[in-house]
Length: 70
Figure (spheres, rainbow, N blue to C red):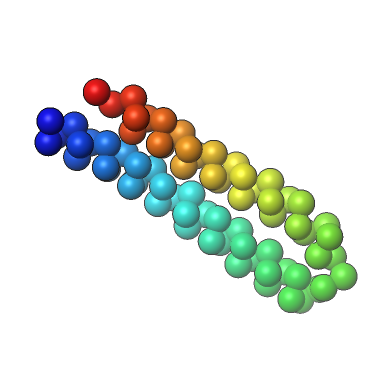
């Protein structure tokens, strides 16, 4: 039972590490771009949200894998 719990913890922990860093970088670069050129904030917002959603989907896949480990 202990090994299974460790495997689940590693799956969700390591599976969320990349998307967490990715979302942070996406937000940082979007804010940097808006700071340099505020007029294009509308054009930057939608692709930023889409990229963040795709990065979050990877984390959700890791959660599903963690739940499927028996």
